[in-house]
Length: 319
Image (cartoon, rainbow, N blue to C red):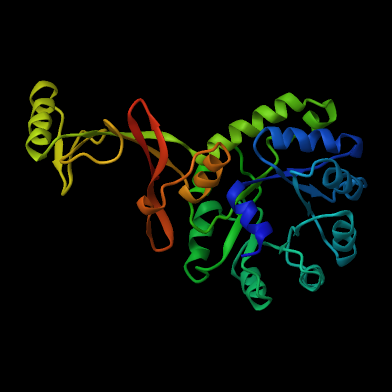
């Protein structure tokens, strides 16, 4: 996959920006970076789009800047000449696709069904914009498309906000999601960078969906694990389930039959995508432990971090 698209996949969210005053572009870009979403799709729905792209690219080096609402090859040229690192179309446009392929610029034509996907496959594209996502059938349509087009990745945009973001983010075929709820035009016009930064931070957490899964307790052996499980069952009426290496108590306590990672055990945290969680945490100085990462059919299902809190190792699980 192209490195620009790889980066978009790591970030998981693409803010769709409509900016009327290019003089606000740099401050907006800095707010996005500070909020943890260093990417922007600047739409050509205003006359200042090219100028805003140029300003963001020059003034905020950490920001990945692309162009949206590109409806002709001429607009695509203006966007790329201004510094756009990727191009997004609201629908299929062969002239835009051909221009971008010739220039080596990632292009994401909008599709809402199999016809657009077929055209894109013929051009060798591997990632598309799914638009308008909610109006075109939402997650049900995405799941339907993933059957015959299992290798295609999508960036759903249209009708997505913090409330339904996580449901899309859990889909294997979703590279990232696009939306404007964190960069609303009135906030940009008012120069409310603090609120935009706050909304971006909230969007990042909604994207990952970190939640407590269970606590694992290191026991000295199978007998101690069985004894403690029986105590939970007897005292509190909690159900137990024995597995090969541990005994679960009511799904939230895991008694390990032999000590594993962590001084006392581990705390398992669920998230929507471990593939996205790993670079997110890496930016905070925390890495996955490679030999603990487990995958199934190309999707990471679990893995430990090189992090211990209160004597407990941290274990990621895919939701």
